[in-house]
Length: 479
Ligand SMILES: [Zn+2]
Image (cartoon, rainbow, N blue to C red; front, side, top):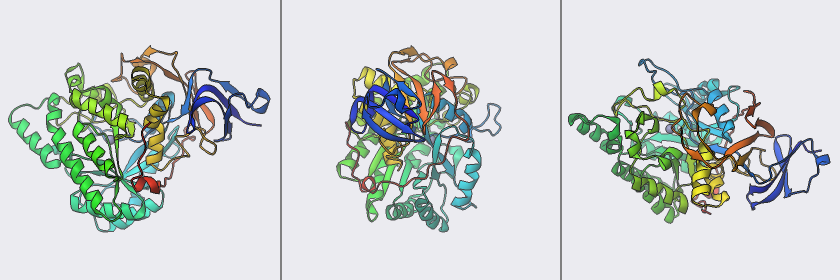
């Protein structure tokens, strides 16, 4: 007797989209068969999704829960916890989150991981994993710890090439240390996930614009500019290509045409270079800084021009960019809009809940892309790149039963009062062409017609091993 069968006419599977029964036993998909294979007597429950879209649960490879963000009164504070973000994620059809461990000086990597586990274990409604963030001048003993961590299922290392703002000194790693890390990841089967900006250009522009009295956050695109992304991406790529076996790199939050082009060129040479952009970068541009509470649309590096925005879309079209993440940093509106200067505006965003609906609308609704391409960019590619495939990101036998049903009949205007994230949404008033009506996480129906039944003990940590073919630059073919 099966536990659950989800039947639909538009079921997105690795073999294509069609009419299938997805058969679930316990936490796993045990079969994907032609629709009608199983009758009601073969399963405890049969859900007929009809014309609605049945897809693997969304995967957001870039979120920050319980992350440092100042309170509106200037005291130290934190963004919302995994409980809030994972509840919103599941309501929005996303079933896996990847956040960060922040390693700081004086600790070992295992100590940093243990500290971060206290924030997460038993406190998240959905499955999750961590990138390991390292910073500053790296002590020699850290390189061996990175090798051990990769072998232990923590294969992605986050590195900043800039301090981002003048007040965050100590975040960036210099190129000598990055070179060492690249040699470790290339040897051990890891990958570096990069915040790529040219620190000299960024800090020069902060100084210059402060001298000129142009400190409003609308000038962020002049500071975190397209030249900075160009120089940084190319320097990082050259370094990664220079180490034996080539280091695999994944650029987070690609924001500019120059960044897309640098990745495209590296990929044309067969280098293992991948790119993520954000849904707010695809839908908002520098003009949005001029709207009321324009900080709502910001995350670092910065929104860029309409031409850059177009380049992100062409990058997603031709496969230069593989994933669309959120850079989620869930906080109140008062926290998000507290700064008005380009050096005190907070980063991160609220948007994990509407991400799938927004991207479905743009990709399938407006651009007519195949459903598979939308699913690749919001789920499958992240699973493949981050070492979760085919456990996650696929409706296939043996995969975890993480399943989202999107209803295209639910065209609606996004209203924050219907969301579960914060007291504001940058997506307020945005029209979407579908909305999730059912989310299944490892076989358990956790959201159904708005009813939420996940428990904090449901979310489990996902250890990961990266795919050697992708580390060798085999690429992900766009559909
Ligand atoms: Zn981030």
